[in-house]
Image (cartoon, rainbow, N blue to C red; front, side):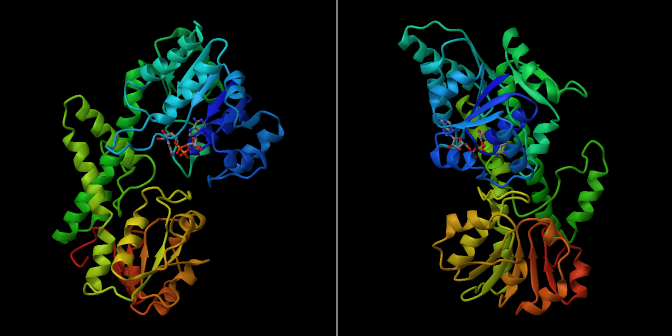
Length: 443
Ligand code: NAD
């Protein structure tokens, strides 16, 4: 099938590459000429495992095209995916300007039936707005062309995006059009062979499903963080508690890790946007508000521990920081806990020597001018001359470091672990003082 994707970010590029890989003819359109230029030259602007090879393979096969030309993009596909950003507006609601701009472009250039697919995460009611914006453009042209707007939210995880797209747990499609349903079944046919992963529902339910999924996951994290803060004060170990409650199949082990707060481009903005949607329909989403508040507080926990350890005086201290990305296997720094930590450390007069396996370029882009930051080529270099080590991201290469090297390099042999990577006894054996999240009274 001929498919157009608007937006070549994490979602758009992965969607386009994976759809091309199963045989569709895909054109990816972006308004950012630099991005499209890079992609045409085989350079992938983001880090995502497996993405580079799948893009280059399908470009060579002629199934994956890139363009900045809207007219060409609209003409290409019978199916038009909208996968542009929906960043938070000033009041926390999702900013739909990019989504509606695409809808208008489609209305300006379409010459026959199109299925318009909202893949971006958009508030309930957006499909109606997309249809309205598109229809208004058709009216201006005096055209009465047929189209359907479908909700098809994306559930891929950054860091495992290609694998998630290729083997989805479920494919949610919201539509009341039989024609659109048939077309979407064909789009996803190759991903649906083993068993039926497609769940059809009305448009509004599909739009809400995406927010509900992210809000549920964020709730699990904030819940565990709340209990970890209690565990610290009560002299309990959250890791024992986690295993204890995870063994109940009604709770399960997935996604109940305590830590220094969730970040990324989705959970923070989606929880806020859903809470904002609630307010718009005169409902105060008390639980969602608490999830967000707990997370914001949790992002300060590491700084508080470091500051407390140094008696509230961090002036002139050098902190080694391992992990900058908001989670492993990505270079994404949006809303990362490391940012809150670094900014607090700088404000307190400390310097940061930081290392991340993938997010160095992105950190340089954001904080390149910051005099208190030194980016280091390896995790060992980050330790040199540092007073303490803090870990913000659970990259594999941090899981079992040489503790002797850490112990010898730091002027204060102390590790603050925001992801509970180690057993306290392990570090104690190497003469390191260990602070983690929710692990007993001495924390
Ligand atoms: P992103 O910021 O990485 O990419 C968005 C892209 O859209 C940019 O390249 C931008 O230049 C482009 N764009 C803006 N206006 C455009 C237009 N008019 N025409 C064509 N391109 C345009 O965003 P992302 O992380 O890929 O997220 C996209 C959407 O998917 C968001 O709604 C997000 O909430 C949702 N989502 C993201 C993830 C994730 O893990 N990143 C997962 C599921 C859903």
